[in-house]
Amino acid sequence: MRLRAALAAIAAALLLASCSQDSAKQLPLTSAISATTSVPATQGTEQTTSTTTTASTATPSTAAESAATTPPADAAVQDGLTVLYAGHSFGRPFAEEMADATRRAGIAGHEQRVVFRGGEKGSPQAMWEDPNVQALIKEQLDDGAVDLVVLICCSSEFREAASPGNHVIKDHTLSDQAILEIVAYAVAQNPETRFGLAMPWADFPGEYATAADHRALTDAAYPLYQQLAENISEASQGVDVFTFYHGTALYEIRSRFEQGLIPELMALVGPKSSSVFTDAKGHAATMAKDTGTLIWLDAIYGVDPLDMPPDQSYDVDIRDIAASALTTAP
Image (cartoon, rainbow, N blue to C red; front, top):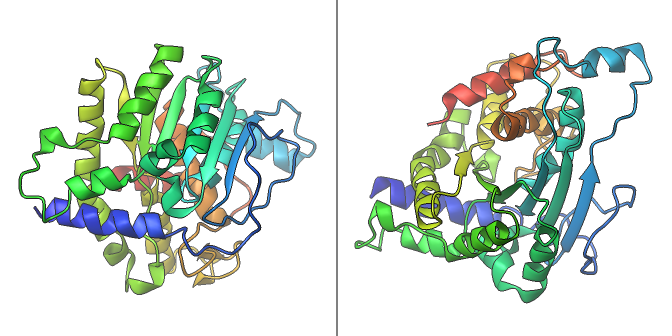
């Protein structure tokens, strides 16, 4: 019951996290936006965009960039995947960095597709129940090329099922009809499609006194999220459905910041280059984005953060931060 109460509370917070983001004018619905097209970085609750980005094969132009992007000598060569992320802004930045991250890992041919909606409208259920957004997701799946679909916590059906007032719910009945239908549609186009369910971090970081307090709810909720993935897989004839918890990267950075271990970060909330979060809602700043992307790289390709080339952009080693974050997930 404690887990269900925690999940209900944190899921509501996660979905509201993007609802009062910096305002931006509504973008028109579009089936695809070229990687060279400028897309506004701020997200409003009514925005819907669909983008495709392919990893660049350009040679680093400077010695410093080369040192930061040379893949490990013993890294196994992998073919890139075509990955679709459908969700809100607590996952979008990492999806958008995957093309560059795979290039640095020596993985050729990663293609990243993104269907984005801000706030509660970015949950799997809200996206799938909107005919226009469902059409965008289907359009990205229809060529049968998508190897992996990443969705983000949490649909209202799942939140309601896990709420403390629902005394009849059993762990084995936790479900999400929207995810089931997305899985079925994707597998019909490509039977080898895999699915990742991402757990972000709690919003409003300033409302928590410490990193430990900040992460308590999502840590408590994560086991039920893992159970959901198992149930979706079982209901879908054994399709590969896994979870990953990139929110731990934000918590690990916050913890080290509080201990004075990241001198280059000056504030919990503030400028993107010198803070953990960029605003009171808790959107990820630059170091958090780069570290969280290493969690995505590990989840999708099995690349250990410590096997990545060092990132010369920081005084601290974000590979170590990401590796530690992976060990703290429940």
